[in-house]
Image (cartoon, rainbow, N blue to C red; front, top):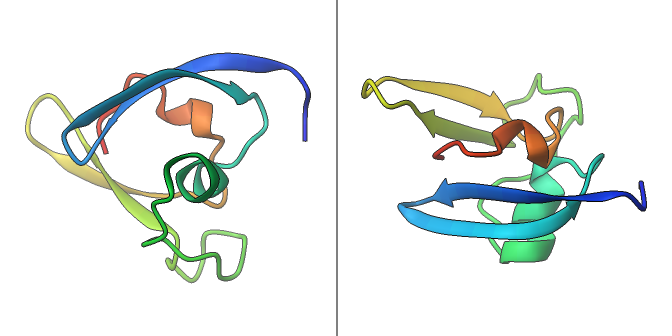
Length: 82
C-alpha cells in the first residue's frame, strides 16, 4: 500500500466523515473495515463480480447507484454520500 496519503471526506449513513488522511491506493472496503469498523460489506471475489462488497451511492438529485468497494479506491468516494 502506498505511503502517500491524502485527506478524504464523505458522508456515510448520513454522518459526515473526515477529513481523514487515507493512503491513495487504499480500497474502499479496507477503509470501511479498518478505519470506521463498518463490516457490513464483505470481500468476496475481489473483482466486483460477486457483489458482496456493494454499497449504494446517494446522488443530489435523489437517484442512487451501486458501487463495488473492492475495486474502487476510497478516494473515488471523496465528497460523495453513501
